[in-house]
Image (cartoon, rainbow, N blue to C red; front, side, top):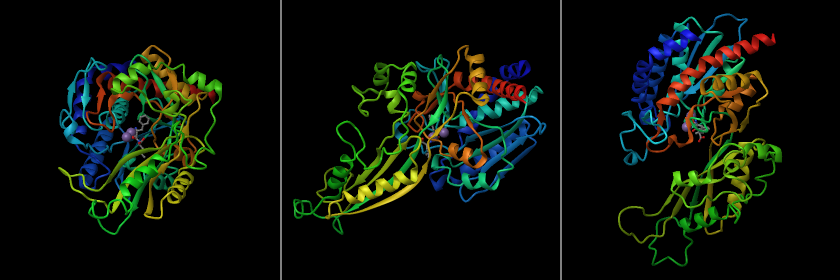
Length: 465
Ligand code: BES
Ligand code: MN
Ligand code: MN
């Protein structure tokens, strides 16, 4: 990989300039107003894979946003690595809380990123991390050091639940055949503490609607007698957790994977400072489920959180009104053995059952996904561990992540392939938040590390056969 690494050093500025261009296209998958920009981004990714040296690059239209597929097939007897990533991004709102416009990338230094970080929506999640793979491949290809077959599947709907990717995988099992799926869309513990993500949580996401009187009413004339849907929704939501922050939906924990005391002890050896954590979020205390550490609360335990809540008058000044309706969006992060359909059903029947007769309740499910756990005793994992040890000078710590990438469990089901989650972001990079950023150190460290993954994985697989 000597020539590859030299190529990377020689092309650092070019790589960064290209990423900045990619970040300028607002590929917000959730908002139909950006559909044209999402399509433009797919074209950008396609062109970048072509110029990086893939033999075949295709755009596949779906019922939603397009999927970019590319490959370089060297020899059928060599192992095949499928790189998955996403080029779509979360909405930038609230835009007024950004220090610079979300789609005009700028580089600024921060305490955690003394070499500078790129501030833009999608810089870390996932354009910056996805693009590391394109550039690592370009470097290997230009140096004649691509050690195995490489496939890319870069989608435009991850942030809206990968709703059309499952069908694409099922329809293209042969095209996508591979020995491992490699994804950079997660974090490391710190820039001097590398880690490989070995688990993701699942997700059940619902929207609830509480309807009381058939119209907004005068809160003096009717208030006191007629049930207020906003008050009632708040009561209902409050009742979903007890004083220990334990979720009170009957059956919710029935299938939760019980992690052994040994594994929990091991997990809690990962470096973590509660003081720094609170300080970084400007909170005086955390407020999680009793009996578990923050590391456990954000990885092996399920959650229930209101993501948004509204109803009644929220304009300037005061308007005396008893609203007709109230709404909330609620997410539940799931752990292994909880299935999104079952949990959504449990939520729905419980929520309907606790509604007082003075209101009507409607629960609408959104997208969901299964949790995933990846083993550490495989060549797939070992290669990631070796690659990171090579470039960070330290063996990475296996750690489960709290976020979700719903398609990972599907890769295993449909393609029969294990996934390796070798991400390079930091939890403090503000993904999904205002001022999302991605460290230049992280961007370049990823590009440097990825070619070693390909090399070590190929060597390990060949030793085995
Ligand atoms: N890249 C994230 C997931 C992630 C981030 C996992 C950090 C682990 C650590 C991904 O783009 C994402 O945001 N997923 C969504 C789920 C999706 C169905 C909208 C999530 O986790 O909210
Ligand atoms: Mn992502
Ligand atoms: Mn995301």
